[in-house]
Image (cartoon, rainbow, N blue to C red):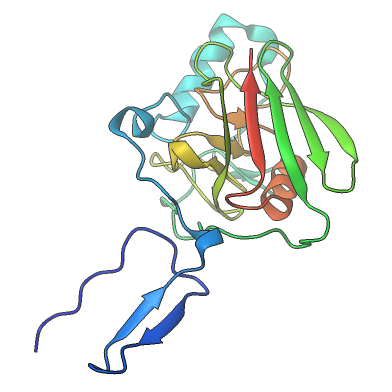
Length: 220
């Protein structure tokens, strides 16, 4: 008996099946709204980000250059907000999926990041606008317009076991660039390319954005 082919990288959660009337074979199809419509290029996959570097070393070097930015994050500790902080016991990449928001009647339609002021402007479908402090990197965070991609859970980590709770990816960069918590956030604190926000805000973005629909804009 021939071995079945492995599933494609696109998310198959909530997929439907079609049966060929002549052959009896079953073909699974994923909803159009929950698929990645292009494979990231080599440059996009290797974009500067928090995903593939040791964030403890990065943060220590950043603090050495800017002592005022020290926040005292301890390895494998839990912040008061309950987002895992620092090094975790193992790499965790199993919680990511393309997904709609909890409330499809009122969700975040636009995430606008202004690098020079470290401001994240959040626009909701009902017209409400909020402005949050964020920590991107003015030199490394790419300026562009895209949409939200994969969304990961509270225990998500980067490839070096650093906690990156509630990671919400920017679609074109797959897992390289996105919004997340679990690392220092504040004025004068910079990521290695991602957009860091507080645990509370990271969870709000993750649970109220829509993969493939919520617009993301990053400007200077």
